[in-house]
Structure formats: C-alpha cells, structure tokens
Amino acid sequence: MKNLLKFTAVAIAMAMGFQANAEITKNERVLVVVSELDQHGPGDLRDLYRTLEGLTRAIPGGILASEYSRVIGQFDRSATSNNFVNVLRTLALDERVKAVDVILSLHGNTNRLYFFEGGVRISNLMTRLLRADTPAQRDLVIKMKKKLRLMYNLSCFGDSVNEEFVTAGFDTSVGSLAVNANSDVEFPSFIGLWRMGFKVSEALAPTNNPAALLAHDGALRTLGHVTGNEMLQRIDSKKEVEGRSALRIDTDPR
Image (cartoon, rainbow, N blue to C red; front, side, top):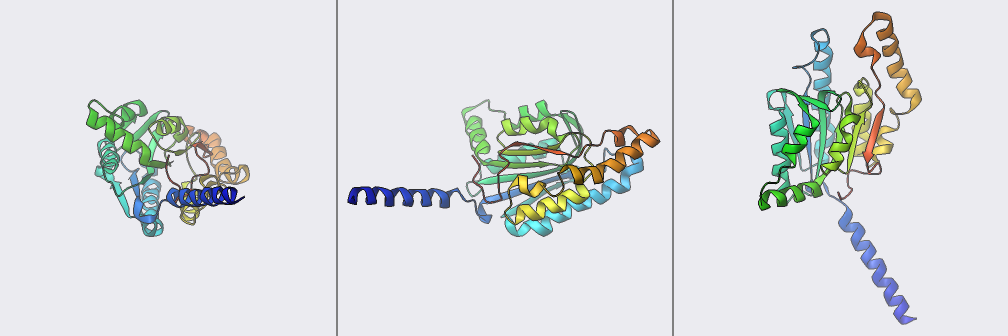
C-alpha cells in the first residue's frame, strides 16, 4: 500500500509539473502582425481597405500588447515576404521566445498571398521559410517549427494555404474559404476572446456560425449578383481551422 501511495504521489507530482511547464507565459510569447492592404486593393475600395488596415494594426497593439513580450509590426513597405521570413527565422534563434503567433492581414487568392512587393505563391514562401542547406540552417528550422503556434490569416482564400502553414510548423492555421469580408466584426471579437484564454474554436464561434455568416455575407453576395460584381459574389468568410482548434494563448506549441 505504501508503495502504491508513493507511486501515486509521484505520478501526480509529475503530472502537475508537466502541466505547469506546458503553459507559455507572456514573457515567452511574441506576436507578429503583417498588414498591407492599400497597395494591391481595388482603387474604388481603397478607403475601406485603409480602414481595415487601421483596425488590424491598432487592435493587436491595444488589446494584445499586455499579453506578449513583444508585438512586432510589419506594415506598408516593411510588409514584404522577405521580412516575414526573416523575422520568423530570427525569432527561432532567440532562446527567450517559446511561442510565435502571427496575424496576417494581406490580400490573397488561391495559394497566393500579396505582400507589399506583390503576389507570392505559398510554395515559394515555404521554400524560403524552411530553407535548410547547412547543418546550422537545419537546426534553425527545427527550432522554428517548435515555436510557431498560431497563424490567424485574414487574407481572402486563406484556407487554401492553411495546410502549408501547418506543415511549416504552425500548430494552428485559420483562413477563410473564399473572399473574406467579415474582418470588421470577427477580428476584434476573436482577438478579445483569444486574450481572455478561449480556445481558437471558441474565439471564432460568435462570428463563424451559419447564422452570423449569413447575416454578414448574405447581403453582400446578393449585392454582387445584382450589380454583377464578381468579387462580392465570391464572398465566403467562413473560417476553416487546420491543426489544433483547442489552442489557447498559453498553450505550449508542439
């Protein structure tokens, strides 16, 4: 009986120790925000995109800054694919960083993201991000994959690149099925709930359910059919989650 009690106590202690180590604290996580919508957006929607740019730049700094050791912003001319790749690979070498989350607010199309310099195929981006020609680079990529955690992608057709981001090391990747048109309501809701410790699936729930999507997207799609606007006709803001839908702000990346 004594041996059984001793074994049970050790097992509980080990479990508690594992749980404690599994939590990522504020000082161990970094948020990267990449936002550029003005450069490649349709001219007649420039005012709208500038408003969305302001939203995606102000909210993370205002709401999430207190929950991360750093918020790294790449905006306008600095929102290039090279800068994005470089910051992720650089953070891989920072021993203080245990988890890296990313918010992408770019234009997108199937298998393509539009950084400041223009459209970049996801395959090309992954080739550069995962480049490992030397032992040192291979070690860097291993470290980076252990730290990459959440990819919250507001780009249109974000679901088309979800699998690649998970393969690159992100535990969770979130992206829309087609043209993403509900960022104005989803983004602040998601960010607020994520900050409070809700799971990714829970943080998306208020705006990613059929009723909410129909209320927001339905009228815009109808307008597209009435006016012949093809972009509006292709709106489908429903977010698909690849990877760990139960991820939280303090979850240890795999």
